Image (cartoon, rainbow, N blue to C red; front, side):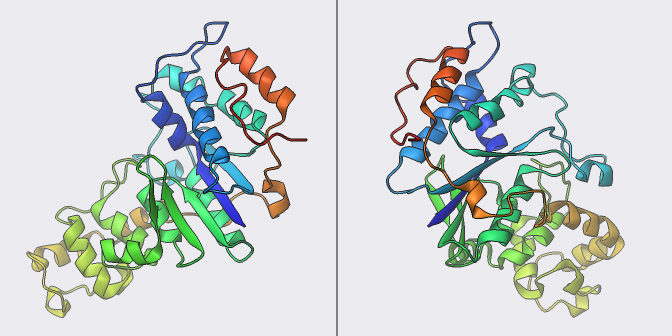
Length: 292
């Protein structure tokens, strides 16, 4: 038995910026991203290799979260396409019409929902599949229990492959993002720390707090370590804040039992009504598992 948890916000953005044609519902409202997300979810639900039995989709709604109170530069919906923003409520109704559990995160983020699901249910299922390419989810990986799925590139990232690529373990990911930054979330990182340097340092020390303050105490070979050590020493509080921003919450509001996440099939009448509402005909008969 697997638990699939999908980053709905990422999927909505991906569909919005895809090459699929624009779509307006009969009232002229933008629905390209919503229709694209539903089509993508149907592909996963219909996939015999995925064998979806329990599934949830999490959304940032609104984009702002508690992290914006911690750091003014954290990501917001400023500058977003109004057509995309307009769909952030209706898309949740669309997913519910598929018979899939929806978690609309208000003070937290979709990534926090995925992290909470992994922490809460890894011991109850054969595998938790976190469906998102966001690199911060790497901190949740557990070999043989929790994997990350990049559905666009058809990649599955396990803890072993993560360690081979990064050089450090999942628990070091927040410290890594604190050092190198994460432009997607508005985390600037520290000057001078590139991915290779940060990986070498964290492979040795594991966490920001374990990195020696003086370069003479660093027993790793990296270029310009004197300057890097000085930067980190001067900006440790700043780095600690960035690490907190990058650390996912594992007790966010989410289902408390697997029964809430069971996928029994697509409710035929409800899904047909949604298809009529948004003016799509090619999806009506696409589900292969109907709720009886």
